[in-house]
Each structure stands twice: as C-alpha cells, then as structure tokens.
Length: 302
Image 1 (spheres, helix red, strand yellow):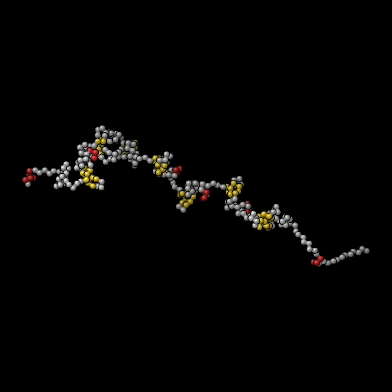
Image 2: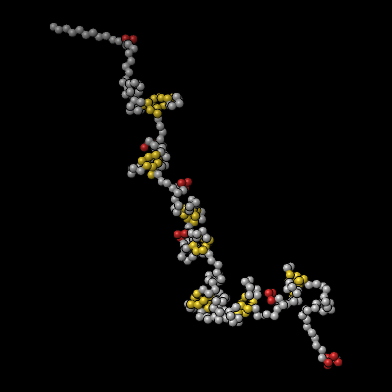
C-alpha cells in the first residue's frame, strides 16, 4: 500500500519579499523606449524636451513647415529633375529663377495688369499699358522726336529710322526751293519760290527761279524789293533816291524807335521832327516836298 503525503500551507503578504521585477526597456542605458520623451540641453545649456530615436539617442524635437519632407519653406532643395531650388508655400521643391524685377518676380516684357488695363513690364519694372506703335521695335510713332546714332536730334521717319531734322525752305512740303517734286496729278516738277510744285517751267534766270522783270529781294531780310534785270541780278528799280541804301529822299517821313515820327535829314538819318520850321506857315523846311496851287488870270479876276 502506497501512501502520499501532501503538505498544504498558506501564505500572506507578509510572507512575500520586496523584490521588484522591472520590465526590460528598448534602450536600457536610458531606461526608455524608442519614441519616449527625454530631456537634453540645448547649446545654451537650457534643458529641453526631446524624443528617443531609433539609435537610443535623445534627439531634439524639430517642428517643420513641411513635416513630410522635414523641411521649412524657403529651404534649399533639389527637385526630381536634379535642379537646385527652394521649398515653396506648397511644400514643393521649386527651381530658383532669376528675375529682371525680383521685387515683383517678373521679367521685362511680361504681361501685367493695372487698374487702367493690361500692359507689360517695362525696363523700370513698372506695369505700362500696352500702346500700339507705328514702330513697335523702337516703341515710337512716325514723327516722334528721337536721337540719331550720332547724337543729333531728329524725328522718326516712315521707315522707322531716326532721321536728323532738317530746316526746309518749304517746311509744309519738307522740301527746298528747286527740289524735284510731284504735283497732285502725278507730274514731276520743281518747287518754286512760292513753295508750289510747278511742272515744266522755263525761267529766264534758272538759278533764281525767276524771270526778267520779276520782283526780288535786295536784302536778306526781304524788306527791300527790287526787280530782276537782264543779267539775272536783283536791281533797285529806283536809282534817283537821295539815300539809295534806304530807298528814301531828304525830307521823307520816317519812324524812330518808340514809334516817333521823323524825317530823313541830309545825312540820310531819320531825325526827330522839330517844331521850328523854315516856313512855319506851311510847317515845312527848305527842300521839303510840297504841293503848289497855280492860279490862272481868270481865277485871279474872280
């Protein structure tokens, strides 16, 4: 007969020892697991919170504008095409561009808008409304003032070239006297002294474009008129003046500065009239021109 002896005992809290079983951590040195909050000091020695990384190091927590790519807006980056760029507001790597006008991120000639309409960016980086020019390549119209390559002032001609301005005898025709011209009927002629295009005219004096007997000017100012003679010279028609240079005689009325009336004296000068006359009754001086009244005997008897 086999007998088994069982010993049954009971225990309570007092019978347990104080041994604490500590769970094993992923980073025994730190006593922390990956992802746990940890503490470290920043470069200034100030304690800050960090996160235990996969290398069991306490890493400073960084907040990115773009967490998915761990970058901030404006950071330098490399695009998928291998082009260096910067992170834009959409967290995309955008290739950097050099603008003519960086402040408005635009280039000269780019389209733009103003309250007054659409335009283009000019060389001053301003938005200028588009203007239709006769000469778009130089942004000018025919007749506009311009500067030639030699630095002379000119006007834009019909070929969109800057042509130096010229002084013409006939500005309305932009031609000089004697230039070949075409009349309204399409006939070839020559510009005359009246700035008319005259066809097939034969002059007695071609160099003057005048005929013998035509009026002409004796002085450059055009104040003294003469007549073309047979030698094609402009000749004074009156050669009997006391003072030929001024085409006047002694005693003729003349005018002094200030619109003061005078008379031509013996020196051919305009002299202010004097109130003292050689013949006070006639208010004339010796040698002055006068008008005589002839009385017949019949008139005298009456």
